Length: 242
Ligand SMILES: C[S@@+](CC[C@H](N)C(=O)[O-])C[C@H]1O[C@@H](n2cnc3c(N)ncnc32)[C@H](O)[C@@H]1O
Image 1 (cartoon, rainbow, N blue to C red):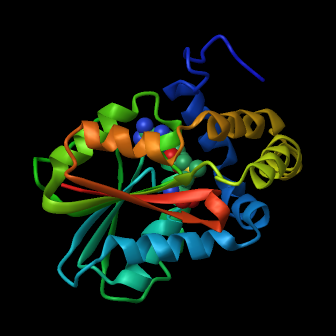
Image 2: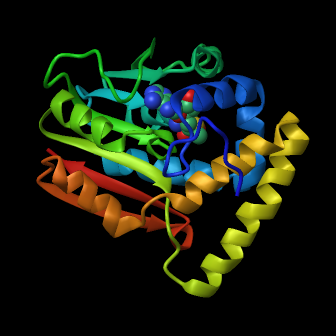
């Protein structure tokens, strides 16, 4: 496993390291995503939108939105009043902004540089908060969960799409092999930065399983937490209700 002097004790990247990784890979991020997931990520995002249970007047905050794929899926498939697409790496948001320029629906899509652990919004500002493949990279997940709880209106939903733990052991072994070999190879070929992909994979392998993550969400006060495994549990969508 690769560790650097700026890693924290749990082996997760520090804020500076995460910012450096995503600002470097931003231009190739979408291509890498499509290739490494074989396009299945579109299905995962569609399911995430469904579980958000959006209404026409919903105001949505998409955290760690990166190049905006979930933001755009929320607008296209859920058609809420507004989606605020946020990330702390401007280069990632720039790609999302360019893609959103082609969106022609009724949802207002806006962009802002925001740290998901320290939300610059008053209490009870949003009906739904979403995050896809973002909480895994946060050094302080609990801070994010507390902030989202605060920023949600009563009854609001935090919908978290993230890599998870396939429950069937033989499949899990195959998947972990894929993560440790194919992904760094592919990422390295596409971006020239193989090490960042090895690093991101370690964050997948170290991320808590479904039950543990649900426990963490409960602990900050969410009244109801459920999850749905997708693609044999490679990813899970957790829904936490305030
Ligand atoms: C794997 S990408 C996911 C992007 C997008 N949500 C998607 O589904 O494709 C992770 C994103 O999280 C962002 N990120 C990591 N830590 C963050 C933080 N503390 N605050 C805001 N964004 C963060 C990174 O900049 C990156 O764009």
